[in-house]
Length: 589
Image 1 (cartoon, one colour):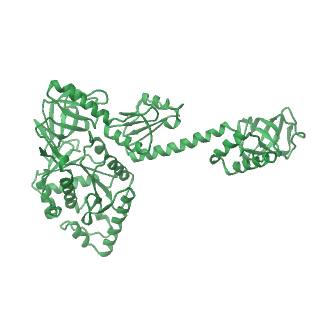
Image 2 (cartoon, helix red, strand yellow):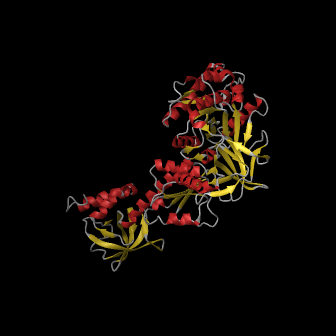
Image 3 (tube, one colour):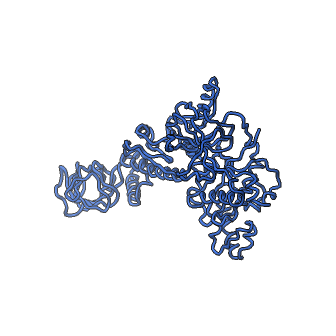
């Protein structure tokens, strides 16, 4: 068995320096070692152990261990997009992660999202407290190591640095992690290492690589064993259209070997795809893979762990995050297809009869979203990859009768189809940040819940207190029409009314406001009201007050819905209870 390079991903909030950290690591590795020692792969940079030794100098010796790993393989696509795509059976393909936090800005939405994803995948990580050079008064000394650098700062700058460091430590503690500056760590198994860095000045990068290498060697060695002679296994990082090649896949190969003309089996949400490798490609030396103008050169084979571009037929329906297995034995094709299908089925979410719908652009993203929703006990009815379709909307709309709170589709990194019409009862929430997606969903659900509960008020008689205005009787009876002052509450048509003794005396037939008929009117308004079963001068007189008349069941419902009533309505409810309890002391209790 051989030992492969551990796969390292870089995650964190936008603008906190994820790309800069990657670029600086590559740049440092190129500058401080012989040209070409760093190898560029598709979607990855391979930094061999000799180069790491050159960059770290004597720092590696501080870890007091032998190194058998061949180096570090950095995934070049920064952020959670790569992290959630890199999925394999039994966990995330990334062996270790760097969480980049701007130590001046602290935690931001994507920082929290990255932590949640790292926790859900149980992926070990170190913290790069970046932009140390932006601390007011900081003087950079790239020739020194980080500890010497800190000691070289003025006392007030050291104080600012320590304050920011402990603010970070306190924030991580809120999320259940114990952290400490890398040189003060008591236990690598119980504490996370924080490495102060500056992607700009390259301070702290040797220490970052030292800690990564040491942790990978000490705790991950068994996970990194692979057989270089067996048929390759990998995960699709990205699916791309390349000029002259058509649809291609960028593959992270984590086990075995893949060759040109190999038969490969690719996972799919429907049925595994069997195709043949038409071409294997890798970038020209030191090419920047995120530059679309990068040129590729054909190769005959690739050995784990590395990244490689594959050109093959029938890749149009392939999605990122799917497993790829080499299988040149025709008799084993069906067996491999079954294994892959089982793997995809295991990754795919177990859905329930009731729940919301979720869509994502990649399998790993779908799983990450599912993990976070499951933690919050939010049921999922359907989970799928791809844009939000008419069928999805129809399925979400079908939840209306059983639970309106499930008439929702969450879209992670996906668009809504151009031909999709969204009914008013269906809510689509989309975002490229899972943390924000969940935040928006919970806010919508809370507001929708309030709307639904408030809507129950329409099913009962609202508390209202009105006064028949003096000298404003337009008809005495059949029906009586009077000017009416709505003192408190909401007056609606068909509201039954009682006098101050609790006797039912009238029903609101119609309401006219500014010469227009309305079905309801709020407090503070003066309107003309037509009353059935009322004769002015007999059951009520000008200047009298009337209240909405209700039964005990309605009263109890209103008490349960009191959080949706305003203060005046609650006061009227109390007055109504006092009136009714004159004859029955336990009325409404």
